[in-house]
Amino acid sequence: MSEIKTDVPTGFMRDAQGRLVPESMVKPIDKLRDQTVRDLIGKALVINKALAEYKARAFADIAAMVITSAEQFEVKLGGDKGNVTLYSFDGEFKVVRQVQENIKFDERLKAAKALIDECITEWSDGSSDEIKVLINDAFQVNAEGDVNTNRVLGLRRLNIRAPKWLRAMDAIGESFSVVGSRSYVRLYRRVGDTDKYQAITLDLASV
Image 1: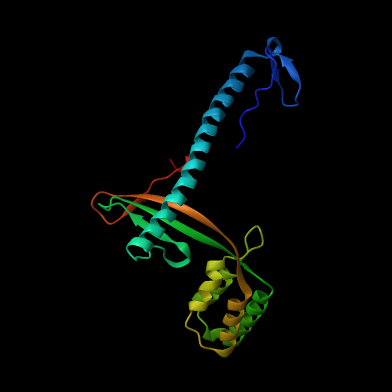
Image 2: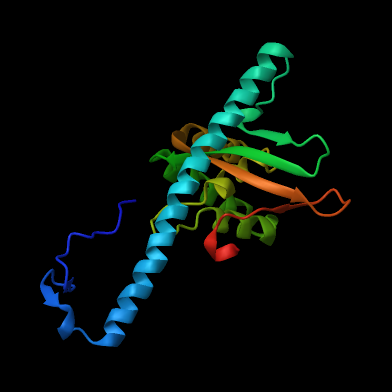
């Protein structure tokens, strides 16, 4: 994030259209508002930079810990897809590195949906309302026109052995691909002497 612009001649203020206005022409309330905003943004920029540096350091430290364990103790800390959880010695704190994959479906998902619709039609009264709701929810699209990948892939866990259904599940399996991923570091502190952990939030809206 860039720094606040300060290239304004002494005795002037720049307005929203980029014009230089003599300070004597600016109302006191406008000056106070401008100063309040600039003070808050200035402090936010410092925090933003510190968070960016902390994030980079956190990922580097976790990666170093995983490598060190693998080399010195022959213990693989990284779980599936790069996920890993580190605990403090007393178990009070834990740090989680989580990799979230961005999954997209191609045109074969429509073929899978058509097969599933045929299954529902053929089953008619023989299929439970719960499964119908589950299927309809899975193929609902969001504002961007994307389906919920977890719900769609969750259909493959249903214990339905009808041939047409199995063909649909195969189509789903072939229709998705990983187009990218994002990594997160999440921090937790244990709640008292329980086995539950509470997130240490760095999100301004959640503090």
